[in-house]
Length: 159
Image 1: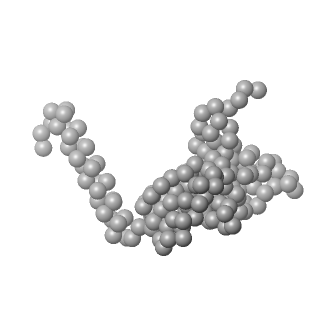
Image 2 (image 1 turned 120 degrees about the vertical axis):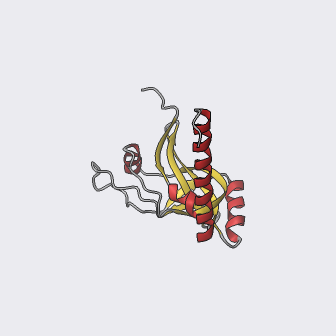
Image 3 (image 1 turned 120 degrees about the horizontal axis):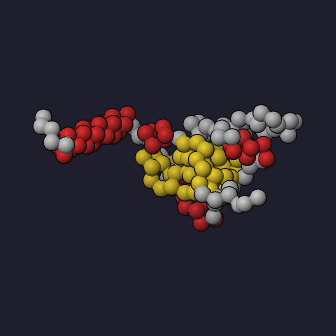
């Protein structure tokens, strides 16, 4: 059987970019059991309630929902179990220093297969306030209106 290549997206946490200021991102491997991998290959996972934690110089992913594999037997996994993240010692130390500061948290942004191996993109993030969210929404809407006006102008329409 040929080796898998490329990247296949499993799940994204779109709300994370809305709720947090993303400071820095990291790509981490995941320690999974067999039925979790089969469930992920079926494209089933949810990162919405997920967060990261550093415990004893080890990185852990908590609250991520990978549903039980339908054809699994008594060897099936728990849906919301604690999963170990595979990162370099230097990256873990860097994340640990930032999380020790007030306001930083570890948020999973996306989960995907890269060359056949399950990966998760995590980010160091600070929570946004409600006025930040409104400001970002207004900026996005203004940019969209600007693009529409530019497109109309290029097509020869006058306002």
